[in-house]
Length: 320
Image 1 (cartoon, rainbow, N blue to C red):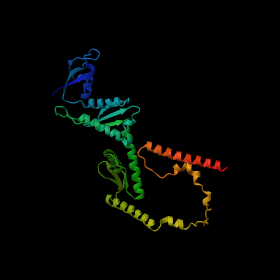
Image 2 (image 1 turned 60 degrees about the vertical axis):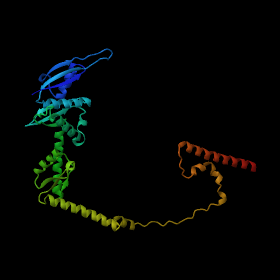
Image 3 (image 1 turned 90 degrees about the horizontal axis):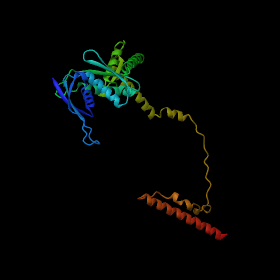
Image 4 (image 1 turned 180 degrees about the vertical axis):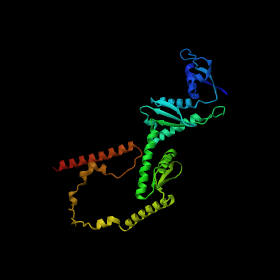
């Protein structure tokens, strides 16, 4: 089925390029008609963009949409990288990004990469304007071989934790993971005799539990809960009875300290006038409605202190 869509640009070439990018099509797969040529105008007055009509079939070019979407994203982020598209089995496809400074596209444990992959799949599988929907495409996005490295790290983690379960006879709960990461853990532990896996939690908090097969999942979880509860109970009992700290403190003998009386201060030795110049520093807390009122108050106190100091100097001169 033929479809038509109008695009504009500074000139015909830019309008055509914008249309091809939005539609995810190549130039040889479409035809177009120029509706209006661009108008430059006089000093910018009367200028108008070029307008073209692109004619294309309703069948989408999923590869073109995915590649153009990622390239446009990289251009906006000012990242230079190569984008490759490969067909996998059935409706699965692989889109890889190779280049320097692409680590920002991965994020913590691939969080950013998974978000970009989600957006690419949305762009490719959205419905056409006429309501028709093409063949569904499942695209896996990868950056500099991160997926393979992450899978290898998860398999090593699964083997290490399974060994720990067999050694200590206790189940191990891993951190929350994405669905495809949990599948890697499950598949790796399946090949290890004596241990098995199960998932607990909901939505983004789903975790993999590795447990002993001979004990069973339910009994393993109950046994671990009992251990934790008993451990907490022991700590509580130690706190109630004084714990280890009371035993250590009882064995320490503190030296006796003789109490000494401070020397008495005669009233005659204290002259309040000596501190009159700094009396404003010892004023009780007072609230002010404005900073200007605060400055006025401080200036007044300082003036009072200076006046008392001057009066004291004058009285001393008179006495002499």
